[in-house]
Image (cartoon, rainbow, N blue to C red):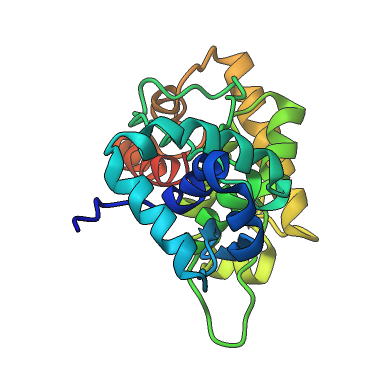
Amino acid sequence: MKIYPINRYRIKRAIIKTSRVGEAAIQKTAQPLQVLKQNGKGIFIAALFSSMTYHTLVSQFLTRDTNVAKQTADIFETSIKKQLPKRIRIKPQAKPRTKVHLTASNTTLNTVPIIDRPIEELNDSLNALLLKRKNQINPIINKTSVFIEKGNKYNVNPLVLMGIAMLESARGSSVAAVKKNNIGGIMGKKGLRTFENVDDCIDIMAATIAKHSKNHNLKTVNDLAYSGKYCDKKVAKEWAKNVMYYVNKLS
């Protein structure tokens, strides 16, 4: 006797269909359907049936008409999904996020973009780029929410803030970052400024970029680099390139 291939739902479908001709046998021999959760997906496992009579009914039913299981598929799927607890229902896979390569000439300074990544995911990406120092906590770790907050406050692209901070602080490992909480290369009258905490430095970074953007009509990362308002014009090209390297890693 040829048994046609069946999927994980087909035994249950056969049970439903054959109940029309052997309801009494089904009630006596069919054990309950168990719903298990394995590897994050719902897997339906039909219990074994002890009655040879029932096995005979199912075998005859499957071999009599090769299209029977296919015809009952929709009936089964609809009925079983209604019985499933919501917590283990299989959700459709999310479409992969389309990532666009950003450049220094098209990345704006004073427009807060719509960040389509969960903040936890973006924070993990930021932390993954940071350098680790023995017995010291990187000053930029877990600061994603602060970059976003300050960016919104001054209408400055938070990804640009993060990119500049990563470059200017050598990924959070520079002496200025560790000793002075200065992760943005912010200069004062006596050289690199000292901040009480990193959050204050991020605030000044955002305020500085917003000020230069308004006063000198700077629109993009390239504009900021070649204006000489944040870095020396001699290193503008390399500076913008390195900032954008981190922006693209984080976007």
